[in-house]
Amino acid sequence: MQTLEPLIIEQPFFKSLSPQDVQFIAGCAANVHFNAGTYLFREGEAASYFYIIRHGKVALEAFADQRGPITVETIEAGEVLGWSWLFPPYRWHFSARAIEDVRAIAMDGVCLRNKCEKDHDLGYKLVMLASNIMMQRLQATRLQLLDVYNVHKRGG
Image (cartoon, rainbow, N blue to C red; front, side, top):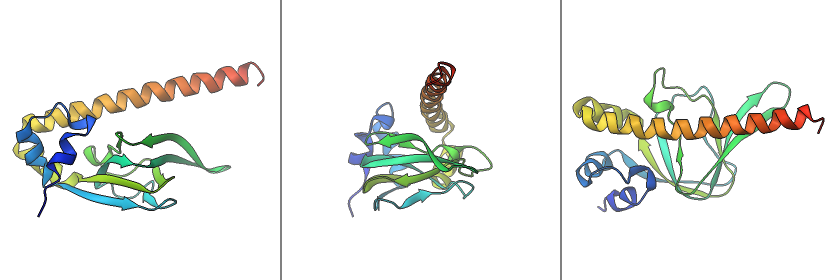
């Protein structure tokens, strides 16, 4: 049986981890495929995984009562999708829909949390990596909101 270690270590999200860390978490990984139009997860469901997108694009969506699903962000190859697996109550805050056929590495969040309980240093590294992604996304969202506000303010 072939391990996913080579695929994991080449992903930008995991570049700072040691080969031992990658070997330790590889048992939590699976190769997955989603057809275009398929939901990887839906808002409110249990958040048990996060995904490293290898190929394709995913729309991160929020549901608005008056408008239906609104794309908040598009996640592409090399990017991480989902961090709700890391924080209680472990529920998705958004939905994720494949825009194109998607190939990804699914990381089992329950498996990773259990491994992090055994290895607090690894847990700290993963929290720091996830926090960095969250900060980048928060800044991108902030810029989008400022852009929308300026368009509306100008009457556009």
